[in-house]
Image 1 (cartoon, rainbow, N blue to C red):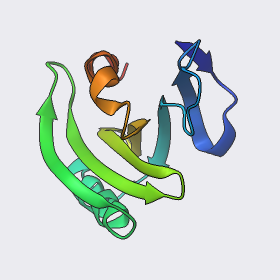
Image 2: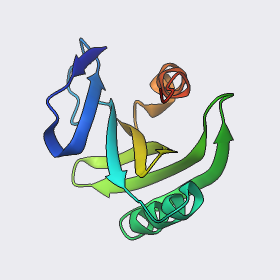
Image 3: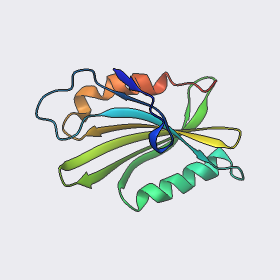
Image 4: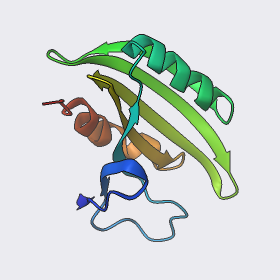
Length: 128
């Protein structure tokens, strides 16, 4: 994986494949952004984010997650773009006033073959 830390669009980091396959309209990635939700619990912020996604995509799953020392929420959804369907997984974590949004994005066509590896990366994320 290649790591980018430009800070563009509140992105703390973005991971992309070092050598993506040829003839791809979209390259999968994992990125981390933050949003400020000072007056909301994680559950309230996750519900708000879910409503925002529901306006543009089709939600396929939404659940609370527990990775030992980190509790959060996972939202899975699909969005149709001109070049085809994309699938997303977003994990939400909160620390103080910030909600950390860890997003995996992929073309629908390559999602099944890369899901396990990308999910392992998502599950390894921990707030310090």
